Amino acid sequence: MPINADKLRSLIERSLKGQGFRIRTGQILPPPDLNKEKLRNLHALAVRHRVERSRDGLVRIESRLLACLASGSEIVPEQIAPRLVEVKPDSDEELLFRYASLHWSIPVSSGYGRRLRFLVIDEQNGKLIGLFGLGDPVFSLGARDEWIGWTTEARRENLHHVMDAFVLGAVPPYSFLLCGKLVAMLTASNEARNAFRRKYGGQRSVIRRKRLDARLALITTTSALGRSSIYNRLKYGERLLFQGVGFTRGSGEFHFSNGLYGAISQYAVQYCEPTAKQERWGTGFRNRREVVKKCLAKVGLSTEWLYHGIQREIFVIPLARNTRDFLRGEHSRLLWFDQSAEDLFAFFRERWLIPRSQRDQRYRLWDAGEWRLWPPKDSG
Image 1 (tube, rainbow, N blue to C red):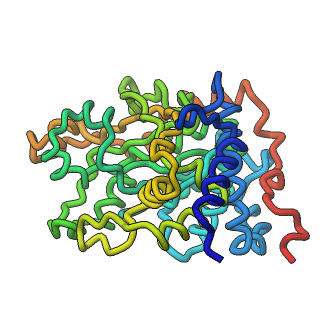
Image 2: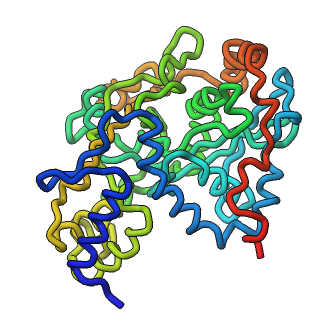
């Protein structure tokens, strides 16, 4: 039965308050004195909803997926040997990627548009170290665009040379060994850049039908919970790999993704008009943000409620010495940094891995079964 505006408006308000948001004079405000624990709590409902939505597809194979994770006793830090594995659609690797992503502190999007996903596997035992996914960036991101020095036209011409890391991190027990830093470094590897070229070289853009050359010049990402301890001061040799350039404005729709989005989407489809700016985009809504925005306005709530006030730190990862000049259209050739996965790991190993393993033994205590999401009885 279709939901009416009054009931949906009430559900939205109760949901926001239940997550910890405050409603003041038509605006929503996050809890005061935000710390990382409070940020996790704000995302908790959306994370739980995502886990429940995924149960039917993964619960029966959870034990098999858990077998892809290491327990501490299966790791010898001196023998860790990472290997990048590109995730293909409808593969076992895709199932593992989806399953591992469910354990993140914030709900992980599926990415949109162009998309590359990787697992990082430890060759010594065949277990998962971590993962990262690259997807199309947003068109407008103030701190990124200011760092590049983009005009609107240069951004329109060259945005296809940029990708965004929409998920990035290590899984336990490798995370205890600072392998989140390793996975972050591998996003900037020659192997990831070359995989992008192989997959997207020669394709045409959706709107302008321009043939793209698939030279990846820049990767961006944002911290999950405020300031990032993984990305800050992350170097390869003496060069910063991740450069902090500012913070997001604190907007998005995660706070409507905790079970309410289905009702919001249903209402928007029935009563709201999509903003179709280009025929090639199709006739529906452009994205989740537009769905929520249209629905809020239609039920008499402020579209400003898309601004949740939770800022995330923005990082840029230039892949060439002249990334900014190239993206501004001032250079036609990229002067790549040569940074193979092997060389990046060798640096990480000596700088972080071995020293950490010698002074912190918590990784030895981890059991892969601790990551189980659904009790065995749920598997039917």
